Figure 1 (cartoon, rainbow, N blue to C red):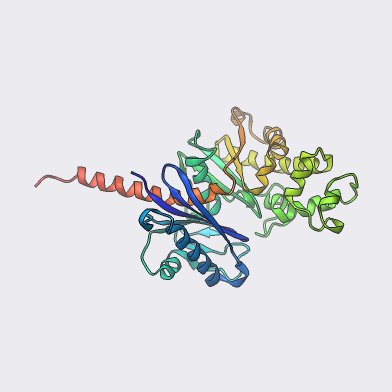
Figure 2: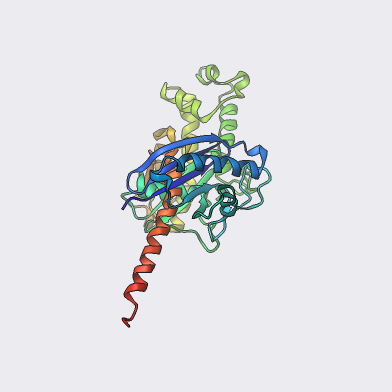
Length: 337
């Protein structure tokens, strides 16, 4: 039987959403600007607007629920977002209650960390489908992480496991926005990487970046680095290889800790593909203990922006599956009267 759910990927710049069918994946998608600077109530209004639009595309307007992938820490009940970065005014927001209030009805609403949602999307719809266990890393505005074990998100004791972006590779390194010195996000977060590339390429006047970015390279972006690398720009290729080296360092620590040897890399920066991943593959073996070094695999998630909304909708489908199983067990255990 087919089920429909709305999957929402809440980003600092845009809110992406999809009407997701449990077997086929995305059947309709839409996006809207987040306008996060306007505060929580405004952003919640924007989410609700997108949900209404997507629900209208479902057969008879019926969906089983709404899954939301959001930055920040999510409580164990999957209802409340705590301190999401780049969202002014968000301290502790019960997203489930806020969305239902705006929609005027009680729908199933489940919230999960955006990287965890991306991991679920990969596990059931994307590059992670062949693997029961893998580490998901998302490279975007920040660096997110998820641990998928036996096709489930490992959430830790409070729901906050998998924060790979805040793992340090140098205790005297630059500070990430989290305040952790040398955290990998302080190297590979979009703004941090762009700043590093600017300084590194400032005097490389042979680089195509000088024709792409604004004066003094102030407008440089990771996308520009990838485009220039594809045109055989050595400077851009060197910056992306530097990023891949940093990524390989932190992934080695992840493998040593978890004994999970498949890593899937998603997010906007992952579009650079092998310009980053080849160096990460060469680097990781130097930081993994010999007993865990066999069958290391780093691959790119190919679903792009869809993987987050697919994983958010998967939250709803998993809840329905678990509910159905519980009911079946209860019925089978009932003693005939």
